[in-house]
Amino acid sequence: MALGTVARLTNPSLWDAITTAILRQVVRAAQARKVYRRWCAEHGRSVDTPAGPMAVPPDPRTVLRLPDEAFADAGAKFHRTALQAAATAYQHNHERWAAMSPDELVKALDEVPRIGPWTASAAAADYTGDFSVYPHGDLAVRTWARAASPTVILPDDERGFEARWRRWAPDRPQLHALTLFTLTWGTHARTQHNGGTAPRHP
Image (cartoon, rainbow, N blue to C red; front, side):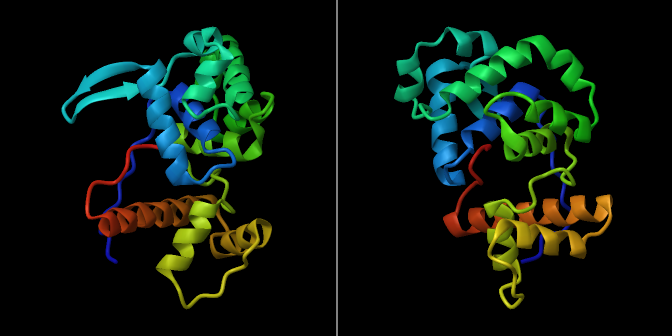
């Protein structure tokens, strides 16, 4: 499948990037998309865009005011404590975080309770556009790498896959490009399979 020139827009909102990554914890991407949309529709605000009205995630203050049942109703019960911890930390640190390098941002986010290294890396890549910090053993990368090159035998486990991935792309620009193109190929393949427009983030 030929993609031609690939361009990926970075997420302009660090809070949205953090929210998206948290809602991806444990669940598969398709389920995370459903929860994200419901979370935004029920507790965020609607924004008019050229593509029509779209809902954005509730801001940190709103998240901290929501009762426990609001998380459950939106399908985000499991993610409640992570969202609340992230909202508290974001209010105190967002200006400092926004000025950090990708590596510094990963480290800072990883220090927030219930965030963890996977979520920190995914959020930092989404916000900064640097996919050399993305969690390269992620299921999405493994899935689309196998689909793109079905004849290549790849390790099944995350650590083994990531080690192979890094051997293929030993420097940072190569690692960024390989990961970005693989995920972009996967988005395009999913869109072609579904016969429509690619689902919105996450």
